Length: 205
Ligand code: VGL
Ligand code: ZN
Image 1: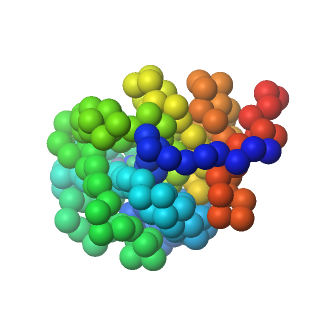
Image 2: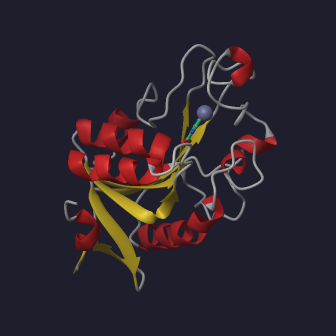
C-alpha cells in the first residue's frame, strides 16, 4: 500500500450523484447512498489541496431515447431541472464545483461524462493530468467515464468504495471493475483521510 501524493494536475470527478440514482429514486442504485460518506471525504481531501472538484450529471430531456416509453432500457430518470436530477443534498459539493451535464439531447444517450461534453478539453485547459473517479453507477456511467478518461490520456484512479453498481445482471459491477483495471485504471481507497493505491484490488484474477 502506498499513499498517493496529490498536487497540481489532480482532479476529483464525481459521477451522477443524483437523487434519481439513490435508493428511492426513479433508477435507484442498490446501496447507492453508501457512497456519500466516502465521496464527502474525497471532496474534503481534494479541497484541502485546493484541487478542482467536478460533478457530472445525467441531464435528460423529458422524451429521452433511453427511457422505456421511448423504446429505451431505463425508466424515465434525471429529467433536466426535475427534483430527481438534483445532486444529493447530503453531498458537500464545494461552491466552485464544475458541473458537467451529459446526455442532454433526446436522440443520444451518453454514459460517459466525456461524451459530448468537452470535458477532456476542459480538464486539459485546467492542467489536469490525473483524475480520480467515483459515483454511480459502477457498471454504466462510472465504467464508461473511466474508460474514456484513459483513452483521453489521463491517469485515472477508481475509488471502488465510493462507487456502486446497478447490477442488472449479478456480477455486472465486478466485471465493470475488472474492465477498468484491465484498461489501466488504478484502484485506490481512502485510508486515514489519504488516498492509497489498493494493490490487492489491482492484482489480476
Ligand atoms: C446511468 C443508467 C442510465 C448512470 C445513467 O449514471 O450510470 N445509468 N443513465
Ligand atoms: Zn440516463
